[in-house]
Length: 204
Image (cartoon, rainbow, N blue to C red; front, side, top):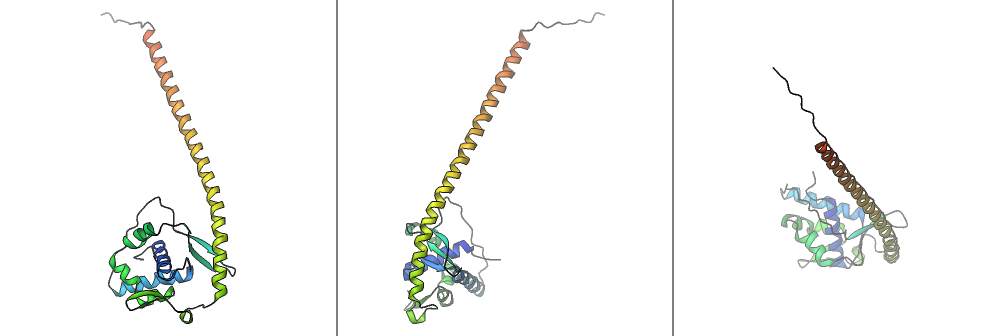
């Protein structure tokens, strides 16, 4: 059983890449490896607590994008709130998970390393894919996906609004039906009270 939810691992890996290397996107394959190594490190530390999940209405800090060759990236939104993200994806995690995530093997999976006890970006010759075209294509993909996301978000918001209006109408109809039913019942009760009642007495 996983001790860290994959969504939390993705958010943590993306923030590490952004804070320490200025990267806004990471391959899903690398983030999956990052998550897997954190779990491995935690088991070696004899840590077996499951990180509790919290519920909030904050939007995600990242979206999913597909590259030209079908590779999947997780990309930070351009306008995400860094302070709030640090509080949610780093500040709320147990110390053991942060230690496991900052070990050399975990950092290596997202092209980071430790140098003088500081997390830094790997040098170009140390990267798994030292390709300038890759960086250029990645930026274009991010821009296109951001536009698509805004369009999709608008469509989703319209659907949500339609759903709310439909739900509101159903609630009003139900309320009107209840009010009308109560009025009819009240009227029937009044008519019953006004009708003369014939009492039959039993004589001995």
